[in-house]
Length: 308
Image 1 (tube, rainbow, N blue to C red):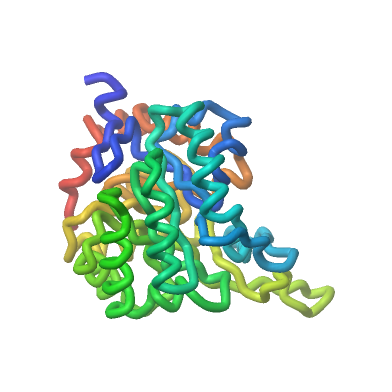
Image 2: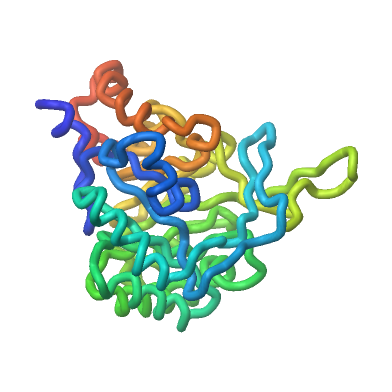
């Protein structure tokens, strides 16, 4: 069995040559990271979360490094759905026609979620959608919808109905006491899969100014501190659900990828690791076969059967 066969993963809408996906908000729309390496080395990428209209985002500063990882409060900065459809998706189609593309939908009302979904999936070029109902850095909208199971179920149903058959992965927030009811709600709503987890709300303080470092006061924590929490939540959801899970949260190595898949993930997204090493993703992909050999793993899909 060659490395290509060992690493390949099939998910709804996504034929991945390997399970490593660039996480939303960390790879822009592809053009940015394409300056560093060939995007065809990835399994897929998730474009920056898209709203109906362009957004300039929160006031600066909106990113800072902490001892536990990165805090960001970008506030869903994006170019708006029309620009994504007219320019960003076509660029990926022309330059990377074989790369599966995931579009991320973020909005402030059910109607807007549905409208953005419809627009993103009408013209082609999108293999799957990630429904961002878990952004902690805006004052209203997605996160509120993503923490109430009944609301999340209805929102998922409407987005799935508007997606023109494009598979929908619901991105869940860790900012809850129990994530399992949310996962079950998304599944009842027709989600084809889940992305777990988004950032955890955090705070950093500047001792000199005695003020929060971020202008937004709080931000979403990403990086290694998130990994044990994400693993635990994925394990909990996998015990009650059979739909695919894309794991995310603090992945920085091939070993981390294997842990996530043993916990119940079917693929992974890597985000914050790219902030301190722009080549983190292709390095992880390259290290996977050797790391699998080290632990006696023939192919990644064998890990889907691991249960504990």
